[in-house]
Image 1 (tube, rainbow, N blue to C red):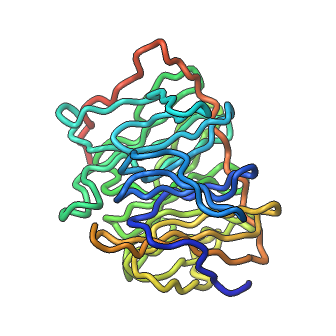
Image 2 (cartoon, rainbow, N blue to C red):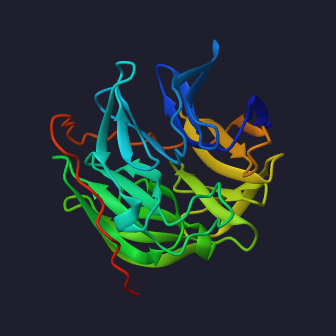
Length: 303
């Protein structure tokens, strides 16, 4: 592996990095708003103003799906937004969506938060995982409070396991996943974080899981059996997410940030890995701007 280089800085709380082969690495500033694209020509704002983005997924149409209070598609046309899954905190008790990923069939998985990480109460009381079907309908596949503070989501190389980080439990869980039905099995503990909390994560081609270890200043690399392999030290304490990119998917991008609005230490780091990452799936769920989007219903509180 090469050294870790800082390639962007001066932001708030960076989240949701995703590689785009045409425009470079995309990342969001959850604290101050906006989605940015970084490439050899510099940094460009591609989605203005929107705050609270915790995850982003490319759509097969060319647009970008972002989380936040709702799940919305930012289409290629400037200013074009289609809400795919709505949320009303007054009825659901959930403030919004965080990390997301697409499954092998093109469905969208979106994890929910019970509290905003930028507020004093960092770890939430309950969360849940929602799935948007190809036809645009939505359903909850992991009910509250089975997940307390939702974060990283990614699939194993064989697409049979969904990794799901629960920051409040300081753990990453593994769920068997049925791609035909879009359903998860019972969770099993994959790995724990004795220091800090697990945040975003990505999976490499050898099955290793790369986990942003927030408040511990590192990315932890864990093998497919859940055993710690090594760590990548990062200059900032709050390491929020990690993704693979580049033409050979051998570039590692790491995002950082701060919960203090007055600080501007959010940065993007890059290094090269000898093991390439997996190419994330793109969402293919229906875009129906003329119809009302499905809405989140109150969480099912069961143990």
